[in-house]
Each structure stands twice: as C-alpha cells, then as structure tokens.
Length: 108
Length: 116
Image 1 (cartoon, rainbow over the protein chains, first blue to last red):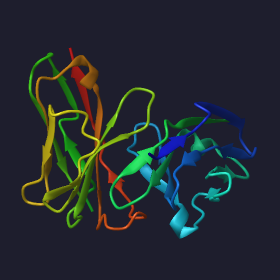
Image 2 (image 1 turned 45 degrees about the vertical axis):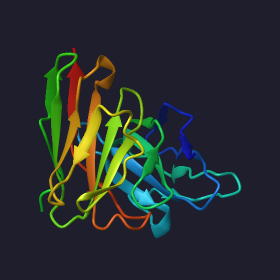
Image 3 (image 1 turned 45 degrees about the horizontal axis):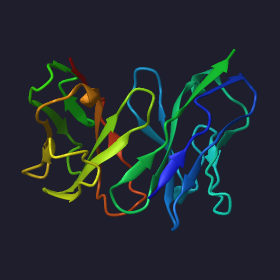
C-alpha cells in the first residue's frame, strides 16, 4: 500500500529565509508525486508535479528515489507563501494518496 | 471558466439520516474524484469515476456510502444511516482524462458535513 508522510505539522520561518517542507513516501514502483497548496479560505490547488519538472512561485521539488522523498524547497520565503501544503502520490490513473499536510507560516 | 462546484457548502444532519452531496465538475472533464477530509488530516480517496462508471471505489469505507455519475458529468455522493464519524469535509475534484497518473486534479470548495 502507498503512504505519504509529512513529518512537520507546523513550520515557521522568517521572510527571506529558505524553507523546506519534507515529504516521504512509500511505494515500491514509480509513483507520480505532487505538491498541492491551500491558501486561507481558498480551495486546494496544484502547486507543482514531479512529471513537469517545473518551478512554480519559486518552489521546486526533487524526487529522490533512493530516499523516497519529494521535499519542497524555496530559497527565499515570502509572506504570501503562508498556507497549508500537501504532498500527494499517484500510482495509477485516478487514485491519489495525500499526506496530512504542513502549515507554513512566514513571519515578517 | 467555471471551476468545480459543490453543493451544499454546509450540511448538518442527525445521526441515522440520509444525505446527498452534489458535485459539478469542470465541463468536458471525464474523470471525477471524491475525497473525504477529516480535521487535521489530508484528503482521503473515496472513489474515482471515468465517465459514467466507477473505475475505482476502493476508498469507500462501507456499504453506507455510494456514489453515482449517471450522465458522465454531475456526481452525487450518497450516505445512508449517517454516523457521527462521517462528519468531515467532502471534496470533489475533476481532471481532463484521468488516464495518466500525472493528470492535474481541480478541486471544488468542499461540503462540510456535520452529523449530530
């Protein structure tokens, strides 16, 4: 069975500091990994996905198959990055497994 | 264009009652998903439709839960004999094809169900 673990429930950094949100997964095959974000009073939305190898709003994430991790990073956090972040894994069409999320607070 | 919509936004019911939650996906999206999110947890997969048929219903917790999508567009999640443990936010999402693992899912605002 697949599983996604986000070890930090809460993460707080100062504006301009680097930020890393951790995500570890368990799956024996080759999963597709995603990061979703939910800003205050907004719906859940896709931030980035491994398959696209893109950088969105300055965030990047690298899939490390050896460590089964997909950590989300940004070199200089902004106050508007404060939100709830979910890591998710999809092993086939349709079903996605989500972590329990990390609440990021960027302090001025 | 219009995103995924869900009605009602809030539903309060009594233990043992029947409820229906509705989801309107983005027009043209063939795949539709239902998730349940309990407080402090991430979304938990319930069921996935490809067109009119349920392609994967492995996440439905028991036979009190049922979902339909008769015309391949709107979907209804039905919960019979509700229990207090069913209280959660029920999320709906849709994607263009749902046939590749990297397909982006677009989420609705959710329905908050409270069972008293």
